[in-house]
Length: 379
Image 1 (cartoon, one colour):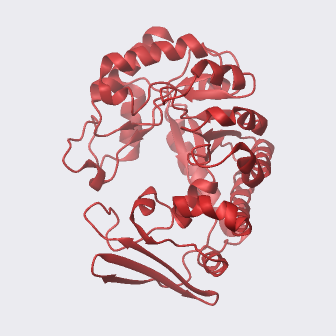
Image 2 (cartoon, one colour; image 1 turned 120 degrees about the horizontal axis):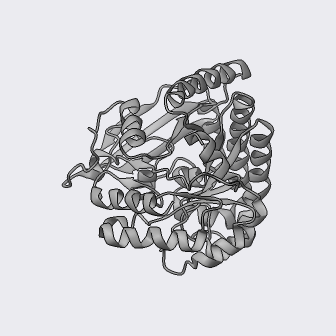
């Protein structure tokens, strides 16, 4: 099988010549790497094609080539940036009002004099999040207003062509990132505030999710029929770490199933990132009917890998394996043992071996090599 055929078949839970291994390599930001040595065998500024060449030809991995499509127009309002003491402010003046955020501006902030909309770093630095009121959301909708269909189609055509050219060199699969849901909402509302908002002002949360869902559906429509193999929805923070199964179904269930159906109609499989907080929501996850779950941490306290397999394996495949936190950091032998346990529980059907959720540039490189070596022995 080609790598692409192997990956697609594994996600569909069909027979493969051997279990694929696909690794997400996370370079981390300069702030995250401070005080630690770069471990990857390619330079931090190495071109994407050189990185993929090494990962495929030198390591033997079944990598996927990402496709990115933005459904919004270029920012129509010039932001105002100001620093007051140790606080960084960013504002947009729109017809719906001022959209404003403020963060603690310290040595751990990686974006200089800028505050993005979507970043995990926002949550730990917020003094004032982007969205607190209905007026904030209306202003955000103007700043991130959808482009017209022709523009989104042109962006999709260009992005897919570029990804397929790169993927074609090694017969790799392509993967389009599409949607962040309540993961992205945390970046905008902040974590505690969003959890409270689901109870105190659920209409505002719903309104944001519906806006984002509309953008996702526009992207899925533009990608349809272009030969992209799969999409990935980021559900990293859409788990029982923050919400009950009933709340997840209420805010996300129908939207996720609609995005799944749109992906399938466009000839694409749907993968979904879920990392921790999954044991109380296995029935909910099963009811989503998604093709694959990426990044479930089998070593997180309270996780029962056998129950995870038994609850989902006849519906969804798994990208899973050693934990970034609990094995890769601890060295080669714990990592090898985690690979063996993954194969023992999940078998060879519907499995893509993958670190959960990624190999970081400051982790012991020997751990990643051990994972790959043990995979080649067992696959």
